[in-house]
Structures are given as C-alpha cells and as structure tokens.
Length: 378
Image (cartoon, rainbow, N blue to C red):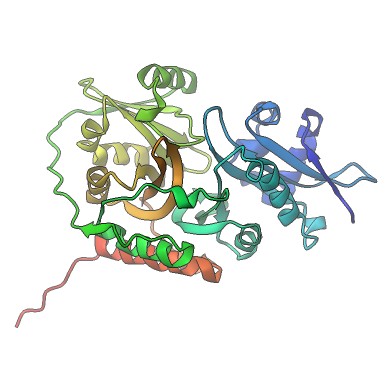
C-alpha cells in the first residue's frame, strides 16, 4: 500500500499511541510513544522533527519516527522508529529514516544523529545501516522491556565532520580494543594516541551518606543554576530528573533515571567530577538500589583521569562516539562508560556482521576488568 510521509501533528497523538502499542506492547519505556504531553511538546519543538507515514485512502498511520534535538546542540537522536505490523516489509522504516536524515543532516541543521537499536534481531540494525548509520558500540543490559535487553549504538555524521576531529594524546589501556575496532570499521586513525595504564585512583576517603531526590522540576532548576555554562557538562538530550546529595554537602550528582526502563545516565557533578569520583561506588550502589540495573556516563576520550576513575569502579568502555561535540578547535570524541548490576546474558543477542567486532571488544574489556589474572605455581 502506498503511503505519504509528512510531519506529525497534534491530532495524530491518539493514533500514534495506538501505533506504538501495536508495535511494542505495554512495555515501551519512551515518553515519545506513551505520554501525550511529551508527545505534544516534541511535535511543536522547532529543534526536532517527527514524521509519520500515512495511508492516503484511510488516513491511518503505518509508521513513525523522529529526530530529537535541543537548542544549542548539533547532535540529534533518532527515536521512536516504528512500523505497524500490517505494513512491514514495505521499506517504510528505511524511508522514514532517510527522509529524517535528509531534512536534519543533509541540510546542515545537525552534525550527527545517533540511534540506540535493539539487538533482539538484525532487522533494526540493518535499517539504520542501509541509511548511512555505522555501529559505535554495544550497551549490554541497557534497558528493560519485556526483559533486560542490550542495545547497539549507531551514528551518522554530516559530510566532513569526521575529518575535523581533535587528536587525543593518550587513553587508558582497557579502551584499546574499542579504539582498534573503531579504526577498522570507521577508518579513523588513532595511531598517534598512546595506550597507557589507568592512573591510580585513591581509595575513597569520605564517610558521607547519600540522599536521593526525585523531583524533576526542582532538579532541573537546580541543575541549570549550578551549570549555567554548558561547557561544564555535556549529555545531549538527557535532562536530569534525579539528584544525589552527600549529607555533608560535599558534592551533588545529577542523573537521568528512567524507572520504567530501569536505566540511568550520570549527567554532571557539582562542584566538579573529582569530588563525585571519590564516591562513585556509593553513587552507583544508590542508583542500583533505586532500580537502575544499568548506569552509564558519557566522558571525553581525552580525559584520561576521569576514564581511569570510572574504570576503577567497574565501568566498561562500551561505545565510542567520534566527533560528537564541536568547539572552536574541531570535534571531540566521547566514550560511553557503562556498568550493569545484573547478569549479562548474550544468548539472546543477535548482531549483524558490522556490529560483531564491538561485541567482541566489550567482552574483552569486561574480562580484563572482572576476571582475575591467574598465576600458576611452579
């Protein structure tokens, strides 16, 4: 059946909710397909674009997808890609993705767009791959749907962006498998980046206990008061809704906690990362007790000390996003560091061939972190 692709309208919200229910059932953890207020805001957002595929004869929705961005950001996220079961195998997913990228990337509105893709089948991976997205890593146990699922990170860049990357002098050794995988698969050269041992991380000296505040409006206002300058934090499309405060007022950690999907992103720390790094284990433990089976942080590849601190607390380099953030010097690479409190079961993971090296790199990094080096007595 022929469909037309057009911008979503507020009048489509009820039909969109039915579409996402038909595709994902009652466990879809994203507000884009479940919360009418958030859906209305995204449709009206001038920095984002939501497209639907409509059947001209009936007016019913056959598919939907959006690229979400925000003021001042040059990075977007492909979200909510869904095709009604009655309209699959018609190329709608690819058509929606390509039209979004044509309007948001090819026109220069954004420098890059990323997508987190399910790994229960190769279908979603191949849809984004056919539309110019390339794999950047694997995020094990990243979200809870019907069960705990792993996601794959993909991105597509505007022309010339990858050529303007700022060189990185050195990285901790556990990141080497990921760097080598990116070199082979994206053609990026890290030959000038030294691989050195992680820097020693002193044992925690604080005895402070953490208080956890879940009040999205309060947390958002306090966050913007603490960080009026975006140069002190960077996590596109993650507005903190949770605040962890030391009872001695020594530091604050801002996080985005999704209780439905049972995952969390660490966004920023005040007064700075050093104070929070001293309590990173306590922060992670508190979030785990709150139901976050997966915790991640996005760190600059050039920040050897910060990466070492997260490595010391069991975080694994899961994905590398080259040329993610621009400044006057060029584009900077970022690393997704992740930690899961739940057992990782890769038996249900299905990866397309280009993604397999990233899964191997994660397993290598995980093994070097959690498997002891055995000595043989002679």
